[in-house]
Length: 434
Image 1: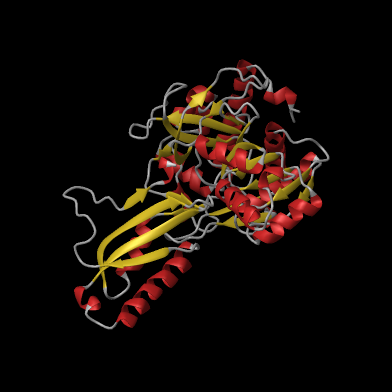
Image 2: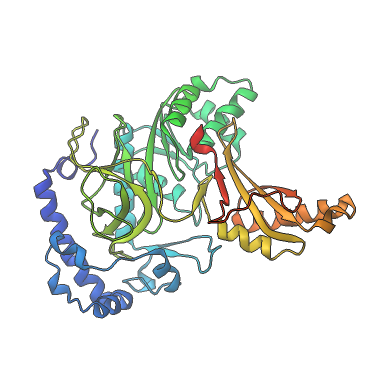
């Protein structure tokens, strides 16, 4: 099933006409309604009348996450706050949180693009969808929720966690579709085995997994463990949350809905556009959003784009899985983590030294793990063991609070962490090796 055949199967030249018209209209809209963009365009000496289509998009300046933080809370919005129907907020652990908001029109857009995602994954009207992404300020749960209702599915708003309950709902309600992070899918498979269940006989036939990077080998493991078709969904709260693009059942890249989210792949060093097939940074312009439209937003995600026709019949361009980041952000269990956050915590605690290493791994259960090894002052090892235990507990509690996920802390003696004459290798990520 294709949710919107007219758009999703449209010839690319016709699609380009729509994109050009929407881009021109967008620039005029933000110039009239956003103090941020009006000032930004004025600084560039750029009049909205100079943007007449996609051929002019490279004249426009980029937007980045710092702009969102510096405009906290509503400085980047293009509409009065009273018109917003919903607001979502990031954790803000590296400074001001980022705030995004949705008008009624934006919520309808969100529901529509997620409905397209569900169709791409193979959902059919009347199916039951178990949403095991977190609800609340995180955009994951509600995005799938709105899309499921829009498409005519029966939604189980299970939210994340409470695994035994998730499994019971799977057994009793027999939903055909599960949506969650890929690592949580493997964790549920493991917990099912512990409970004496065969996860390969689950009711789930379709999995929609995202919010963290995952490999094709992990896909194979999930499909074998849970007996379903595992598909990838991508999104980011700054753009709209889940629903930016989604794999179809041929799993040959993620179809991006470029009639509303115009993608560019750029050289992160020069900012110049790269041709299809080359790896570069994904930049997205929201062509139709009302509340907080963004122009040329730099996602920092490294991907490539394929514009060849897909066997599913859709003409929309496809993005590769994320191949890396242009910054040092890690995504662990769906949460963005920066090494600088960890360093800030360590340096605020007496007894630690500025030498540490972060080990990210994936347990047999499929859950991402993070261990922080930190050197402590030599005299700590001369004191009573209970003082070391108290220090370890203090670090762990503060890390858990700042990062919003459980970490393992290991105290080591001075000189244990490898030194470097160049840039210190703070992070060892073993997940790509599995």
